[in-house]
Image (cartoon, rainbow, N blue to C red; front, side, top):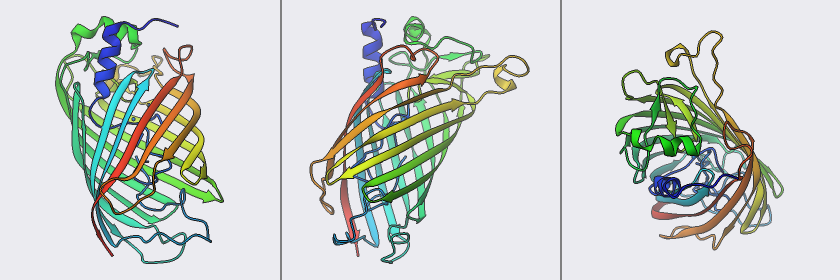
Amino acid sequence: MMHQPPSKALRALCLALGLAASPALAQQQESTAALPEVPTSGPTPPPEVTPANEPSPAAPLRPIPNVRLYLTSLNLFRVNPLGLETQNRLVLQKRLFDSPSVVLRDTFVNAAASLKVSPASLKVGPTVEIQPVALFNLRASYEYTQFMGTMGFLQSYPDPLRDFSDDALDAGEDRAYSTSGHHFMLEPTLQAKVGPIAVRTKFSFEYWNLSLRDGETTFYDPFLDTLLAGKGWVYTNDSDVIYLADRWATGVRFSGVWPQYDADQGVSGSLKANNSHMRVGPFASYAFNQDEGTLFNRPTVVASVAWYLKHPSRQDALPFMFVGFAFNSDLMRQR
């Protein structure tokens, strides 16, 4: 195991201090107190009852408001890569169907304002989300992104065939500079529950348009922990198998990140670059209460450990680890 220099720890710790996460265990706190969202590397099933936390037939159904205004917050600390983050969204939600059906009961459309901020970056933008049936959720988001040039971020390169290990990032810290750009995301989620077992898989299709220095086409994204095209796509997936028991949720998560490159990044023909990574491991969460309709709903702690199945520089190092705290606040509920 390689020792991590103090500058690296400080940079990564401060990097995440701000707003929101990803493919680690990234974007579920508002949908179920049992399992807050954990960033992939850095979305979110819906608030209220979902197939992952539907009460048993013997239990009374939780009433779902017709209109709801609420705030969600997730704060987490992670290791390998290091980071401390906070995510916040202000959401206005409208119920689609007033139905007792398991499939149609938890259906909605919403619009939200999202803020992600840290000493290294600022991300802000709108989100729209629809869940036409309980088994399927679709979210579309835009973020204006500003990197401050602090804590060693942002670093960019002429092509994706570069070393972006922790040591290489520390060595290039003086090359960091401030820049801005645009980040678009489309995130479909499939989810279901049988008895106490829930399954969920979330895909993310992301497009970046970031202003990089002349002659440089890729950049290191500390959230996804890989080199991304300055103008191009990246795909991610988080898949969970969850066991639900009252306030506890335990399970296993698979996370994957697959950056896409083309001739604009100089990797056409026989020259290829593969900076994808995958990891898998257990998680657990505990909700201190399951209250609704207050300013401090469902405070939940969550922790996870995941081992890298594939990574350009972390596969033989420490596992990915994180702990987080999530809650939501109801500001308005209309029956």
